Image (cartoon, rainbow, N blue to C red; front, side, top):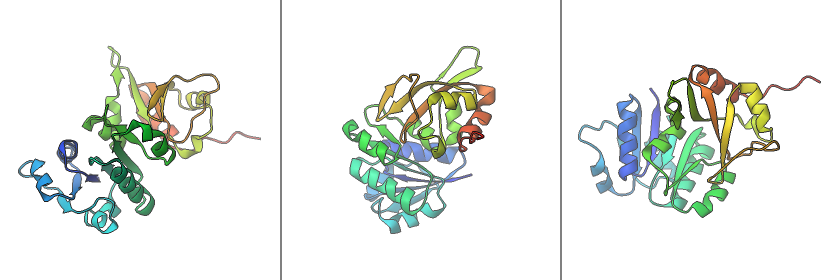
Length: 224
C-alpha cells in the first residue's frame, strides 16, 4: 500500500481519491474550499486537508513527506504547476502530475520536467497512468491475442540525449511514438530522447516488468 496526495477535490480529484482508496492505498486530498469535500463518498477514509495545495505546511498535513505520488488537478494551471514543483523539489516526491488548461504552456512545464495532462484530453485514467505504475499495464491499446500492448514507459534521466534506437536495442521494445510538448510525434533515424518526453512503446505483455526495469535504470556504458 502506498500513500497518495491529491490537490483539488473537483470531479477528477474525487474520482482519483476513490479509485486509489479502492485499490488499497491511503489518500489525502487538499482543497481550499471545505464544501468541495462533499464530492467524496460517504465512508471515504482518506484525509481531508483544507488549505492551499502549494503551501508547505498544508502539504505536510497531507503527509506529503511519505507520499509515493502527488497529483495536482485543481482548476488553476499556475497553482497546479507550483504545487507540483514544491512536491518534487522540496519534498522529493518522484511521481507527480499536473493538470493544465492552457496547452500553450505545455512546453514550459515540460522543460521544468513536470508531466502534464491537458484539460482538453485529460481524464482520471490518464492521471492514474502517470502516478500509479501498475496502471500502465492496462495500456492504450492491446492487440486481439492479448500478447502485445501499446503503453507508456518511464525512463531513467540517464537516457536523455540517447537515440531512440539505443532504447529499442537495450529494452527489446519498439518505440511507437513520443509525446513532446503535449504533441505526438513519430520517431526518425536521428530522433533522441529529450527531457520531458513521454515514450510510448509496443511490447510483449510478458516482458513488461523486465522492460520497465531496464528503462528505469541508467543505460549501460559502452566499453572503451
